[in-house]
Amino acid sequence: MFADAGSHLVSVLLISVGPDDCAYLVKQAAEMMKHKHELAGFLEGEIFQSEDQQRILLVTEWTSRHAWSASQWDKEVADNLVSIVQTASAIDSRTYFRAGRTTSPGRD
Image 1 (tube, helix red, strand yellow):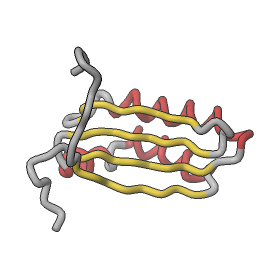
Image 2 (cartoon, rainbow, N blue to C red):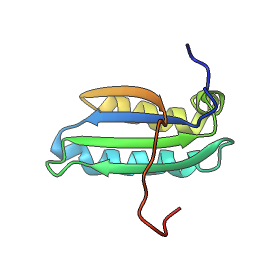
Image 3 (cartoon, rainbow, N blue to C red):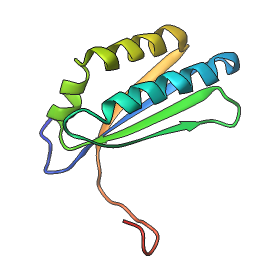
Image 4 (cartoon, rainbow, N blue to C red):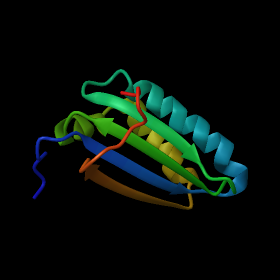
Protein backbone atom coordinates (compact mmCIF):
# COMPACT_ATOMS: atom_id res chain seq x y z
CA MET A 1 0.00 0.00 0.00
CA PHE A 2 2.77 2.47 0.86
CA ALA A 3 5.49 1.06 -1.38
CA ASP A 4 7.44 3.56 -3.44
CA ALA A 5 6.31 1.89 -6.66
CA GLY A 6 9.66 2.78 -8.28
CA SER A 7 8.77 6.47 -8.51
CA HIS A 8 9.72 9.66 -6.77
CA LEU A 9 7.42 10.82 -4.00
CA VAL A 10 5.75 14.21 -4.38
CA SER A 11 4.59 15.98 -1.22
CA VAL A 12 1.88 18.63 -1.51
CA LEU A 13 0.94 21.02 1.30
CA LEU A 14 -2.02 23.34 0.76
CA ILE A 15 -1.93 26.01 3.45
CA SER A 16 -4.91 28.28 4.10
CA VAL A 17 -3.94 31.67 5.51
CA GLY A 18 -5.28 35.13 6.16
CA PRO A 19 -4.09 37.68 3.58
CA ASP A 20 -2.13 39.52 6.29
CA ASP A 21 -0.12 36.36 7.07
CA CYS A 22 0.60 35.29 3.49
CA ALA A 23 3.92 37.09 2.99
CA TYR A 24 5.21 35.85 6.35
CA LEU A 25 4.27 32.25 5.59
CA VAL A 26 5.77 32.38 2.10
CA LYS A 27 9.01 33.54 3.76
CA GLN A 28 8.81 30.67 6.29
CA ALA A 29 8.14 28.20 3.48
CA ALA A 30 11.13 29.56 1.54
CA GLU A 31 13.37 29.09 4.61
CA MET A 32 12.13 25.53 5.00
CA MET A 33 12.63 24.84 1.30
CA LYS A 34 16.14 26.31 1.43
CA HIS A 35 17.10 23.90 4.18
CA LYS A 36 15.37 20.91 2.55
CA HIS A 37 17.66 21.50 -0.44
CA GLU A 38 20.50 20.25 1.77
CA LEU A 39 18.72 17.03 2.80
CA ALA A 40 19.41 13.62 1.30
CA GLY A 41 16.84 12.60 -1.29
CA PHE A 42 15.43 16.10 -1.96
CA LEU A 43 15.04 16.72 -5.70
CA GLU A 44 13.12 19.97 -6.11
CA GLY A 45 10.52 22.19 -4.55
CA GLU A 46 8.19 25.00 -5.55
CA ILE A 47 6.11 27.55 -3.64
CA PHE A 48 2.91 28.98 -5.10
CA GLN A 49 0.75 31.77 -3.70
CA SER A 50 -2.88 32.31 -4.71
CA GLU A 51 -3.90 35.65 -6.20
CA ASP A 52 -6.12 36.41 -3.22
CA GLN A 53 -3.24 35.62 -0.82
CA GLN A 54 -5.37 33.11 1.10
CA ARG A 55 -3.61 29.91 0.03
CA ILE A 56 -0.02 28.77 -0.33
CA LEU A 57 0.90 25.59 -2.15
CA LEU A 58 4.20 23.84 -1.36
CA VAL A 59 5.24 21.05 -3.70
CA THR A 60 8.40 19.04 -3.08
CA GLU A 61 9.77 16.00 -4.88
CA TRP A 62 11.85 13.31 -3.20
CA THR A 63 13.75 10.26 -4.38
CA SER A 64 11.63 8.04 -2.10
CA ARG A 65 9.05 7.97 0.68
CA HIS A 66 11.91 7.14 3.05
CA ALA A 67 13.83 10.34 2.12
CA TRP A 68 10.70 12.47 2.54
CA SER A 69 9.89 10.82 5.87
CA ALA A 70 13.42 11.34 7.17
CA SER A 71 13.22 15.06 6.34
CA GLN A 72 10.30 15.44 8.76
CA TRP A 73 12.70 14.70 11.64
CA ASP A 74 15.16 17.43 10.68
CA LYS A 75 15.16 20.15 13.39
CA GLU A 76 15.23 23.16 11.04
CA VAL A 77 12.44 21.71 8.87
CA ALA A 78 10.39 20.94 11.99
CA ASP A 79 10.90 24.44 13.45
CA ASN A 80 9.76 26.11 10.22
CA LEU A 81 6.83 23.73 9.92
CA VAL A 82 5.71 24.51 13.49
CA SER A 83 5.74 28.22 12.67
CA ILE A 84 3.67 27.59 9.55
CA VAL A 85 1.16 25.38 11.40
CA GLN A 86 0.75 27.91 14.20
CA THR A 87 -0.04 30.72 11.75
CA ALA A 88 -2.13 28.84 9.17
CA SER A 89 -5.89 28.51 9.51
CA ALA A 90 -5.79 25.03 7.89
CA ILE A 91 -3.30 22.67 6.22
CA ASP A 92 -4.01 19.81 3.86
CA SER A 93 -1.04 17.46 3.37
CA ARG A 94 -0.95 14.75 0.68
CA THR A 95 1.68 12.58 -0.94
CA TYR A 96 1.65 11.29 -4.51
CA PHE A 97 3.68 9.24 -6.94
CA ARG A 98 4.02 10.75 -10.41
CA ALA A 99 1.85 8.89 -12.93
CA GLY A 100 2.83 11.02 -15.95
CA ARG A 101 4.49 14.26 -17.02
CA THR A 102 4.51 16.59 -19.98
CA THR A 103 7.07 19.34 -20.55
CA SER A 104 7.65 21.90 -23.26
CA PRO A 105 10.09 20.96 -26.03
CA GLY A 106 13.67 21.61 -24.94
CA ARG A 107 12.84 21.49 -21.24
CA ASP A 108 14.09 18.70 -18.97
